[in-house]
Image (cartoon, rainbow, N blue to C red; front, side, top):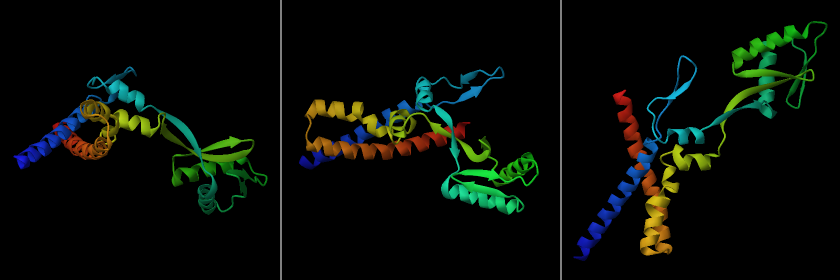
Length: 211
């Protein structure tokens, strides 16, 4: 009888974990959508999933200039020198000054731009008080990853935040708070994260095969 109770207890725990995972992945699926640009320039959600606006808000990005500095700046200048051997420059503090030697600075600037295009076409030039600076535009999320991922962006990370309504609240309400509940809660999050990953990969695979 005792063995039977243990067996059914473990089976119930596994079933509960599966239900938790299905609940969490279901929340993520409710936000799984994409945006298309219409011919008139307006945006439209393709499937109109109910939680997609929340995911879009959490996934907002901004463009930032990332300037070349330190060893990356030195490496870039070395490549420019190799491509333009006759270029006379003074470099320092992430900035470059061209010595014109009686020729137009525009000629050298154009040469540098052509060289940069072949090195990395994402590199841009900025003029600052007669000095050149090099940068790349980088897309960065507005919200910290430790906020956006557990809430809705990452099915695996969601096992932490979404365990609050699916584990902590009902379990503490039923059994109270103690070290055993705390330990099992940590184990629960890890197990649910693994099951989430398996279900999400399977879901995306099925979704791709249907398209």
